[in-house]
Image 1 (cartoon, rainbow, N blue to C red):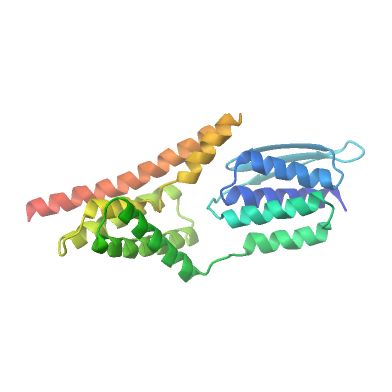
Image 2 (cartoon, one colour):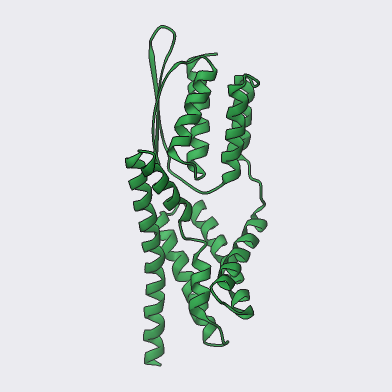
Amino acid sequence: MSIKDILEVAETAGQIILENGGEVYRVEETITIICKAYDVHVVESFVTPSVIMISLKDEDGNPTTFIKRIKKRTIDLSKIHNVNELSRKISNKSASLEEVKKELVKIKHGTNYKYFTQILAGGVVAGCFTGLFGGKSLDFVISIIIGCIIKVLLKKCDELQLNDFFTNILGGALASFIALFSSLFINIESNVIIIGSIMLLVPGLTITNGVRDTIAGDFYSGISRVMEALFVALGIALGSVIIFSLFYYVKGVI
């Protein structure tokens, strides 16, 4: 096996973890475990939420460096779990390099849930948050509809590769518009519905990882994640404020 093959496997494993919501330290640990399992003992890695940099040295001391730009991030903890399980097999010498490559491709391109299931789950989550915040049965139903529509919106925005900030503006605006428009015809708590629905967009894991990275000493990663979360929250708020302003302006004119 060549050092480039080992580097490719380590990079792919790290990329899967980082793209699906994993912490920076977990990416660096996985890269180190994989490389040392294949007898590469000089391993240096530097990971941020948007870049993976790996440098290895072969037996003759010749360095090989790889840089990978991470352009998209989502949350799929099952993929992180699968990579962790695979790295344990690698450390126990129970998987060849070719087997690991094939397994990583399956993990990277695989999905555990069908598109319809994801949409339905988004609706149920939004409805449950609305109930948690004091919403009634009708509020729950409206939130389910909004949650399903938001999941479709997020999928389409991902396919179009739209900026996350703009996507969250659209999500906040959509939730506010449907709730406020529905309140014109039926007796519902629009504020509670909006709060419950936009919980699908709130970057809870990003904030948690940012704090954890900062505590672990990865200050650049921690600060960048916290700033990312703040901009996501700003986008959600901006979308909602625009619709609220238009709604009350039109209502006042009428």
